[in-house]
Length: 187
Ligand code: F6R
Ligand code: ZN
Image (cartoon, rainbow, N blue to C red):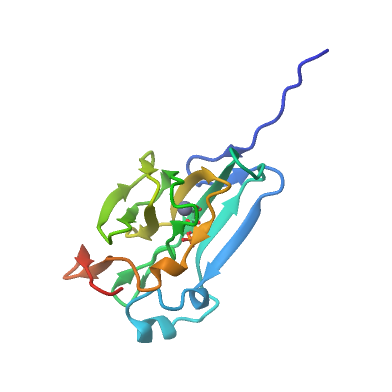
């Protein structure tokens, strides 16, 4: 019997581009992000087909014990004074964690527990983010280039967006020329 050598997928460290077969790409556009940004008039002024972020996923096994691998590319920009961000979610299986790894650009990872306690971590090329279970997470691009981050999570985790319908407990805005995180009561 001979041992086979499989060709693994690869990622370009400078751009976060995957080289692999069967990469699945999902584009999230401004129009998909209803209720996400604070300044509704500013959000409505943006063409609804404007891409805000793309997620590319490698082809991997599903089921208990298996892992998904995805790359988020979050475009720079603001809606009003608020930086571009992902929708953000808890995992449906609350106890399931995730790892994010910064690849390109600069931004923040907003984390929040079930008691609405929020905190932030700086995302930059090489940063490693261990997201515990029971913790909602959202990427925010505070820089001027695309923010790309690799994510690895259990395929059974699922996504729960609904529990954050009232929004996260913090918003990150440009105010007085500075990046500022503001605590908010209700989204
Ligand atoms: C998967 C994960 C990421 C996000 C991606 C888009 O569990 O955390 O791959 O799914 O950054 O963000 P959402 O899903 O919040 O639109
Ligand atoms: Zn997640």
